[in-house]
Length: 256
Ligand SMILES: [Zn+2]
Ligand SMILES: [Zn+2]
Ligand SMILES: [Zn+2]
Image (tube, rainbow, N blue to C red):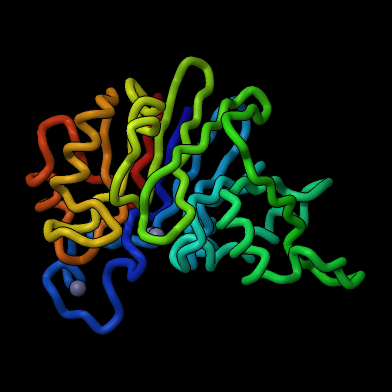
């Protein structure tokens, strides 16, 4: 399995427009963060987790040639407003692209992109998407996909567990709390990735302390945090996290 972090920043991205703080002005390339998206390659298939507003730029930066399917986590703007950019890939597919989302996220996508439920006008090129709402674990071309419920404000939030060839990724980009069943599903993953927004507490995101505790419970072979805001630099984040846990950064690629 190969995992590429296309974006690792919170909803503003880093730098935040108009901000002169030390992190936004940092010369460390790891302090430049697009909004969060993760590319997963397994069994010859390419899966994308979330479609942030930066998606087009991220696809160009990584020269992504095709996508087989998309796994949505929730319908916040920083995860869905690049959804329409999927048409660059759906246009070249023989059928509609499968996109899995929770019931609440699917509802929001149908409201925001109302063409999803309308017949296309011949000659136009809207994204051809087949929205699917999973009711539990399922298989996609030999890849096992399990939705991971997580608490994240009012969002109908799910992370994703992806298993192939005896390897397991558990990715929960936005969360404040993990229910015990999600911790149990993630336990022993090869790679666990969760939200750590900043040092101060936040009502709907984990801070570093909460993320560290959750990752400790999960006990993955490798543990990473994402969705960082500009209050903490990459170097500071690396120092803050307990031993064995690291901040991800844009462009980080992990094969396992
Ligand atoms: Zn987010
Ligand atoms: Zn800043
Ligand atoms: Zn969110």
